[in-house]
Length: 353
Image 1 (cartoon, rainbow, N blue to C red):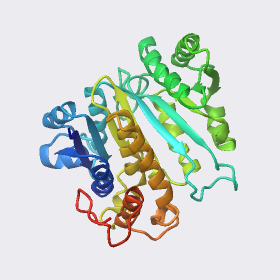
Image 2 (tube, rainbow, N blue to C red):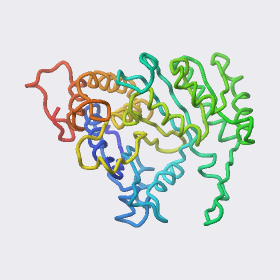
Image 3 (spheres, one colour):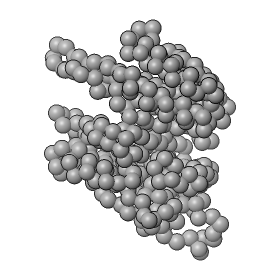
């Protein structure tokens, strides 16, 4: 049976990287694609960053693939990013998985420091300062509320501990418990839950210290557990380990349809140039195969194909000269090996392999 995937191409370079990712997904298994609008694209067409029909299409799918949302055109009362926040809430998604693995690319870190690093950030998506009420903005004052519940912390922490069991059995929980009451709750809940996972080592780090340590010694970290704000910042910081934010992928999991998207933004300045890095979107497809479609072997095959492709083809943001299409083609060739150039055909989405 074909997998049902709702595709939200989004804004800026989103449609370009999604096209590359769909080519790879279509090479792995039969897919029934349903398109819908989100973000600035949806504001322009529907006056709403998350139209009701988009949410319904996502709820009726096996997985959702998103390109990117946002841009300076939509900075008014209707913000493109609001569509993504509402989608996560509407799908009941509460845990964001963001792997950061050394891919052999140049990095800003000291020579050899990132080599072998493989970190999984597990971030709470449902609580924290992003969603806390009350919130307000006036010319003289702005208010945000950091609200965290025991249930929110426990369910995302459980996902982190389970992930660690499949990896190197270490969880680093990040907070600011020396200052914030919400972080004290966070630390207490995580510590209590750790008793159910005696095979997993737990350590706690303040976020300011962690921001330094994760770049000073990235290889020592396995699973990093953090709230919404700290997890957002730390996972972007880990682009220093991979070489570019353009190669970072993510999976958002919870009670409803899981959502998969690259971590990067819409990069309006690159729109239409054909040089956007599709690696993050393609690796998001690998996460989709692993966490939503029950195809872990194909997920590994995609990851291996990306690793191999990066040795011969790179987009300009990671020191190469390849176009988006050329890099996607290199990945598809690795998926289809062994084959000769004469045997190489066209992918399920019309891309030359």
